[in-house]
Image (cartoon, rainbow, N blue to C red; front, side):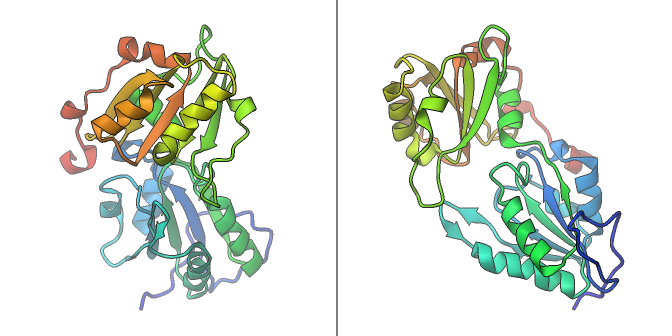
Length: 276
């Protein structure tokens, strides 16, 4: 059993009274995959935590930053296969904090961009648990940058939209008219399984079949793969290439810049933590 420790930093804005015996839950984003894209604050909190409840898509090597005696609990989610159901996970965070532990709830990307951070915090607020949120580089920004695809560009896109390719009920029932617009970059999270339907709907709601689109798999890491095509041909090319999750779909004419602006060479990337 871990011994209670004092909380690190200021209390979260939960607007509930905190007890000295109650730990703090830190909802932490680990970024898009590369360890050196982790924020300094996130790294410090991970190194000081009593318990770390972590997801599937966290930066490789990030758990090596934890204390040797820290409790590590896997709560990953893969294609509807949840190691710990969300409601049970929420209660776990409450139990750990009430036992006096400082808890890092470690997520891939950013906790508030398709990371269910808001759902978990609602439970913490209702239970009177102090919390803080530590933003992370969201996958859309990180993966697009490493793929050489600017999300906005004065000659291509004056707006960007993030959309989920997998709703809570398993459908892809999105506001397609608002997404299928010119001069807009749309990034679909968790959408590779429904790629054919996403491309079909974007064409059906007004975009031409030759509208540029791309898929970025394992972005920012040594396993990164980038495939560019158009809405009509992307699903078949992705299937032929064997691309699977984790991957992002980027739709927009900014994709035309990828070959010109590509800079990241996965084969020559390195892990700063292991070389330090």
